[in-house]
Length: 461
Image 1 (cartoon, rainbow, N blue to C red):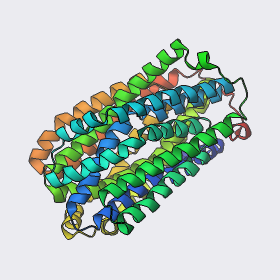
Image 2 (image 1 turned 90 degrees about the vertical axis):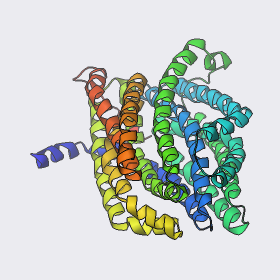
Image 3 (image 1 turned 135 degrees about the vertical axis):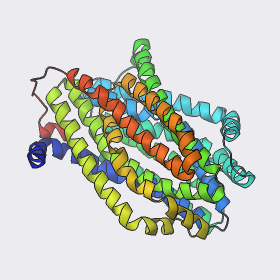
């Protein structure tokens, strides 16, 4: 029976080709992000004081919370651009980018203007040593100036992905993170700038990436059909109202997600600087998992978004099934790799003996995480591509509530093991709550017998 099911799933070769056409470059580009995090950890992890590792973890957490909160700029842009692409509307594709850019620049400017209260608020809720907090505050004060560029990069990446173009995001991500990694090494190991060097490298890379991304968007827009929208069309009130409603739901969903991981890091700090540093090292495994599986989730966003724009249920279901299947295969392979090489990876990330020993104790959790989390990543991609933001929001709220309900008892019983068990359960809850809503989403996408899809040649343009 299993072999028959697998044969049926692999029979639709066109869907699998389209998934890999998008997912392959996305996986490569996504993996440069945790690679950057690993380099950040490695260059600081070889400094003599474990407080530096904790400072980078805390500082990066602040930006994860802030920037992930504005992740709707990429997610919403991808879904809307994909649907515009499915309708073959060049004018609408331009409008999606321009409206997203207006919001990104306004929000980025607001973050810079409000940096003092943001930093004060962030460190009022984190419980770390004075040495960690002092270095982390310096990190945040430098990196915050890149906020407008960082948020613009979200819009650029989301827009190209919505237009079924995963190669341009690959070029941009390699460029941004390559600049960051090189400057990390120069500033920290070469010039001895420490935590401040890590922040300065990120700032320069984000601004450089935004400039390159803006040029690539301009070049692509010259070849789109339709008319270039005027000022009134970009700022049309009803369109902005709908965009704000979509983004508000995704914002709430993302804030719940970042809150869960912020609580994870903050609670890890209660176990001391060594455990905090060990958790920071092990979170690199989770980052590799997330960004790798997100390749298929992002492919799902683009493909199901295009199918929804055409109201083609058959194409929608084929794209979802193909991304589910490949995501599961890659998750299983990732777990196997982590199982075989986890200790070696830890040793590459830090040379501090106490941090290494603590990391070995809790290594089993990040090893299992790919298998435990694959379904929530895939379902996120499907619902984002379909712009079903209300379902995403509600599912995440329920999942966060369940996580908070089990977190404290697990920590009291098993300490840091309990903390890792709770975050693992949170990932499972995310999948279960979206799976309940999936049949209704599928029924809403066009008539059941529709089969008119774009040809592979057209789809690959």
